[in-house]
Image (cartoon, rainbow, N blue to C red; front, side):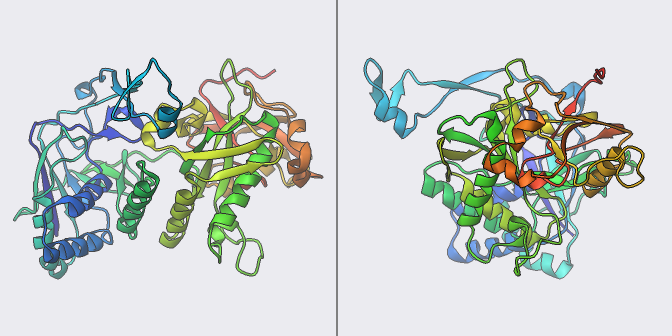
Length: 492
């Protein structure tokens, strides 16, 4: 057993949750601790021997199972979480803004005065006990080898989370009793390191230096946790798909709503061109002999603007969705693909070029609602399609194999979801701004669906299910994207 003890010296934690920039992160995620230790490795005043030993210790640490955690309270108490004040922080201008700005704007060392400001939050949490411990179940012999190096590295750790959250860290002599344990399903999910995480973080940092801006690493592995001694509630049914990355148009012309298929095909072609041969099957969807892949693979999903008063169905960007049961090397391949797409150019004949920007967690919360994963994740009992579903067969009412409910049930089973209670389909979507089916049959991109039965669907489940949901035979090409409906709607 090996423990790492962290004491928050001010008695509070300033760390922002990735999925909610106005919420504090408690308990600190093991993934955050691992990233902080790696940053300390590169910044601390260590000699070459100490640095090599610390790096070997981190490489060993990422191979261990997720740690147990001692935190008081183990889960954030609702009455202790306060709504943070909105702050408006000056934003550094881009090189383009510097070149294009004319008097009367003044510059001081390349910084415009007055500077633009953006909204930010600095959420904090004051736990009962400011000491948090992470406990790994590891071989005693390996612990004896790496504990001194980890202790030396931990003592150089300055903060965990925001820079205004200073800490004291070390490897204690005694292992504390954990209050939060890894579980098959639990009441909270935490980011944890895994094999290859160290290399991934360093690759993101190196690319950020090359591009001159910060590149946020992918979220990484998620591990459910449950309080010790408490049986967790059964989890909600959840789609097997996860958001790998979200990209938006940073520069370039807006595409019309009917170009969703074109966007998906262009992203796929660009991604394949940027990936060195041999292209992994998890990205291409094909085996080495060009036969169709036998496992689920990466899905490219344009994100149209729907379900708001000004919705027009135009794509503001796209998401890359990956199955949650991928092997470590497959996850690494998708992570590399996301890095290559960041800053890449998509070329659309007749429209112009898109310059892509990958949105990190902070940018997602301030981006258009249609680009936020929460808009497509639920949970909800009723879902409606933003893009039509490719059924794979023409539905025949009452047929044991071709009834619409039977067909959609098979597509839901592909994502590990329960059978729907009811399915309604037709040429138009229930979502405001979503295009009718006919728009997806137009142009060269629509030729793919010639002879296929496409329809918008509305699906009811007996219990809430969590997304994202992308169903049907066209789910890897932007079709079958479902959006949760928070309140039941009356059918026409």
